[in-house]
Amino acid sequence: MRFRDVSREQWRAFLAAYLGWMLDGFDFTILTFLLVEIQQAFGVNNASAGALGTATLLFRVVGGIGAGTAADRWGRKRPLMFSILWYSVFAGLGGFSTSYTMLFACRALFGIGMGGVWAAGMPLALEHWPSQLRGLASGLLQGGYPMGFILSSLVYQLGHPFVAKQTDEPWRVMLWLGVLPALIVFWIGRRVSESPVWLARQRSREEGGRRGASAFSLARLFDAGLWSTTLHTSLVMTAFLFLYQAISFWYPTLLGRMGRQTLPFLIAFNAGAVAGNVICGRLSETWLGRRGAASLATLIGISALPIFAFPVATPWMLAGAAIMGAFATGNFGIMPGYLSERFPTAVRAGGAGFAYHVGAALASVAPSLVGAMVDRGLPLERAMSYCILVSGAAVIVSMWLGPETRGRTLTET
Image 1 (cartoon, rainbow, N blue to C red):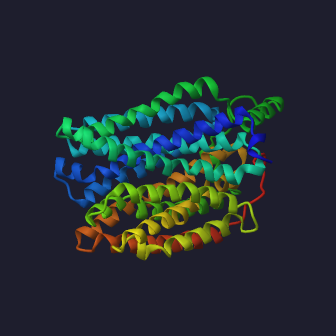
Image 2: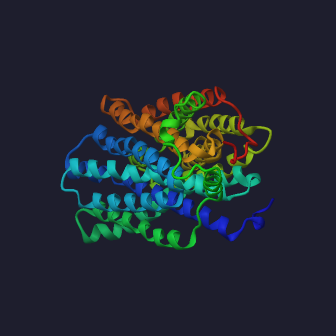
Image 3: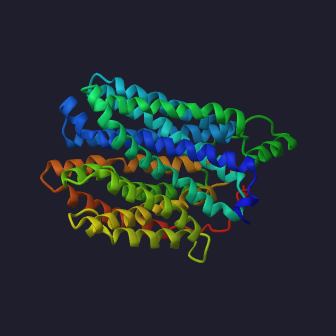
């Protein structure tokens, strides 16, 4: 099976999920460049600045569960479109904030749409694609988020100096750009088809006389045969997302405190992540499987800590950024496929959305925890490193506590 065997319809479904996730990543990560300005504008400390990220991650669970449940009940496409519109609106509204509390509320509500895009978009794409390319497609999809980070890095580096000459509060303009992803909703509505796996299941239900919507998928996640899967995948995602937030949220601030230009390092980090997601996704189709590929990538990534988080010569720090991105965050390349394979069709979007975003909620303490450690006098590089090491170990252990899923079909119920 080769890329040229993928149909236009399958590519369009992939692009809908990819663009939604990439622009989601842009809207979330643009905030990380603006933390110092926001602190100055509202007079808040490091822990409060970190709490803006925590609020988004906590509310992702609402969007992930809500959109996932809706996607199992009414199809994958419409919840994806609604989620993109939702996060675009609240990303832009954040730029109008007149207080820290208002900005906090906007970033929290933004998280609902952020969670919904992943929960509805990933099954839409993967249920279109051939099973032989699922691992690779999984890595490509997850690489959309670091591409969004690269985009926000470029926009900040190139656009912020110009905007700063026009206004005393350039951070507002940067947030207003968050409304632009809403434009892709019109294309999705007209050009992207519904998941064939979901449609086949609906036809099967109708032919069997079971008309109407399926059972409430969230409740089914705690049935006797699924509760252990729901619990385990939620813990896996907690470890993965805590690791990611420990690495990425304060990284632009760390570079600034070292007197480094952020753009080269963030491009190295996120270009590494784009490549690493694809590599890890592809490796997960080999004898390593999902567990082996994720574990190997995580080990290689955290081994780069001395040249990632601590001041060394610039070439070494660039290498550290690339390695950390490619492996300690590239391990996410297995995740869309892995979560899809852990849940049956009837609850696939709801199950994956629940696990991913409950994990995001539990891991949401990472930005605030790092900020609080710094407020207590710990150097930022050490605070980040402690959190990275502990969560990296948790990623490896949690993956091996569950089953290997390579080779499972998505039509299993």
